[in-house]
Image (cartoon, rainbow, N blue to C red; front, top):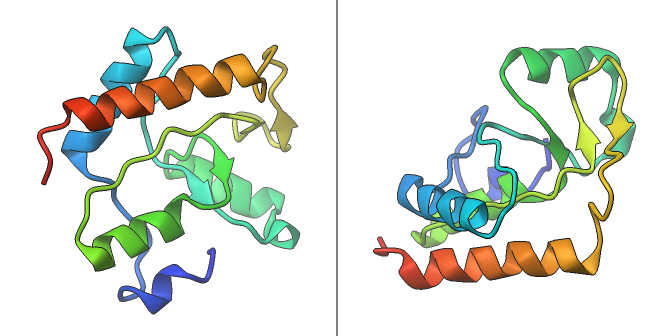
Length: 130
């Protein structure tokens, strides 16, 4: 629903990350002490499109969070034929029938961001590549 993907690939419901890079990223994040949940996310930067029926539909498909850029990033990476994965800070949960901002302490703090960046760098430097 982000509008960029269709310029780089045929329309489709999902953009998939690289399985090997996703595994490396998840392992590195866990090693860094992060809680990791893997699965699809709903990409939608158009906040006026956020509605309860859409939330319920994506949640039924297994989406756990809402974010703004991953689908476009995956589409461009596929077009450029490079590996791609995502580590998403959860700030908006799809667990209830309303949009809830996470109550986790430091969800957007510098320490958490540094820990996730370190995990991403570790995954990239230890990945086998394409």
